[in-house]
Image (cartoon, rainbow, N blue to C red; front, side, top):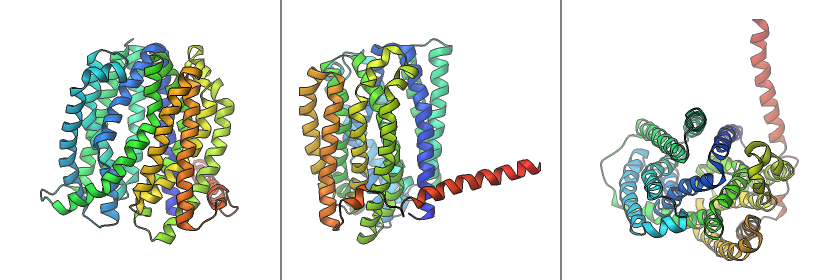
Length: 445
């Protein structure tokens, strides 16, 4: 792994970890101040707009990266086309949701007031801009803006939620107002930032739009399958159990998904490079990334399984103790899904999303069937077990396809090498070196 890639990946991971810590604090505040039932409704209301966006964003974030890096299209041209598609897709998606408003409220939001449904739909256009413009930032290698936005948004969220719920004694509506305000503020800032960096061009290029939609549609189908694979269990817990169980399960999944910061940070940085790499280099980067991800997530997973249930009670309170049980299933499942994150980007960068779609779609079907069988029998632990089995299936399918295409051996993906460990030694040396450099002027002063 090159030095610049290592530094950017580490910076992205540190930013993600810092954001997670602050989001964890925000989650603790909402859990303790709202209680399990209201916290469960808050979770469903917050997840729904992301689900709508997943269905209408058309994979254009990935298509933007591919167009900028592989096709060498000017970023200003790409952003102009993104704005047009964002407006049209948002109108269609929100319109369809309002056509089935009654069903959505009673099935997806567990009978919450219609105001909460309107709140969810209001966030859709802002989340669409966020998704598409983050793709542009990846394409032009401005990862520092992504990291800055993530940290600033999380810090503001923690402060505002503290004021709204603890200082002002607000309830569920106050928590939703804070969420909406932050989304508007941060995505408005993102829009202005991308405009300053790239600008917009009014000229319309039909061939470019056709090319982006052709590439994006494949990624879109993959994104739908992956999102539903991640969130189907949440909706099924809501449908088969109650909002309190949703709150417990969401806390458990949130802790387990901490491990995904590793592959997400690495994938966020390497995908633009994968999209521009020759095939042999691409396969080597993917194998090396998988080894690092497997090594780090397995170590983190062992720690989480050992301490997780105790941390749940310590942070969230005894009322949320049931959230600890699913961790024993979710954690190894997320370790497997971390490999899926890296392998799926490998095939996307080759414009072979069909492999990802097949794996995600098959695993999603198994996930739904397993949840329908296991949740009534095991509660939220059944949802965790269904996640472990389906995540493992998806990853094994991609692993088989990757090994067949690359000619590499299984150990090249799963077993860390001594030469790989040099990265961690250099990281420690970099950190210690910076500390020494910072301490020297202080000592002289």
